[in-house]
View 1 (cartoon, rainbow, N blue to C red):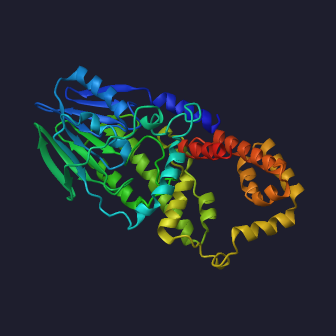
View 2 (tube, helix red, strand yellow):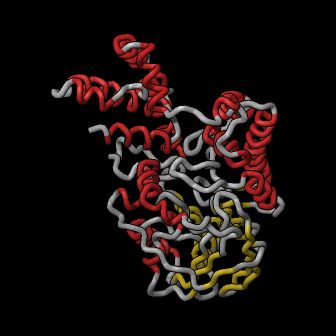
Length: 426
């Protein structure tokens, strides 16, 4: 199957709207939004673990929850601060008395807020906010966000209780629970352990496809070694049921140990092999080409590259540990891309370049076509032919290559970014 077909099959198999009764007082809501939500029914009220991504989706959850119990939602616990887990909280504003969150272990880099314009733009491309439903099959880790399908912008309730501790034990309306700090996808990530029920709510440190060890929208380095440790900590609890922040719940101790353990081991494999390649003096490109998942991991659907990819993970680790310089002195003081590309154009010649790009597109070698298209001097073609014929040719080739490459990849994030790039050419 093409990447597009694999993503469609994965979406169909994993994101059917499902309300699962875990036991008499714990319910799991899957595919009510891009993220999951968990309702824990106490003596007189409901504790909600995460609140979906948008008001419209949260209204659906609220309606179905009222079919289960007439007790109001009085407590919300955020597993972390990403808006897709908090955006529906406002729907419960009339009854909620406490909103619980943990402070991040490490503060955001100073002045990161100055990047909001580009981060919002890149985030929109990653999540496919401007794409049609046909173009945006799913988000890889869930159905489309509510903001993209008319369910409203996030309506987030600010935390009323923010913990700094490593772990906190509480009894909330008769429910005994432990909240444990477990940095991974985010620095404020926690999991919730319900010992009496042998249930663990893991937030986003585990979900059933390859994670965003690096997010293409742009993030600070996610400490992969710490993420691996957090997965080990989750596995140390004797859980019989694991309720993730995305994808399906896991039932049975053996299945949890096998699936989450394999998830952890695969991430550790990528981290350690990336470091080994770096230690041998390989460049980032050479390392990304070398580090691949072994066959025993490729067989697992829950490690499929439907969200993040191994290649992005390797490059994120490389930059996170040693930065941009790959150790090759040639790359210390390079000429600009513009100068270098001008020399290549002169050597290749326009006719040969156009012929090769056309050939790559026809042979579905879309990535090679895209990289060769980077050599095109777009401004010169505009001046050379005021009627725009040449520019239209290059633009059409680039659009075909972007859309063709999008069909080849299974990662929803990569697919969205490629299609968004093609639409911008219009």
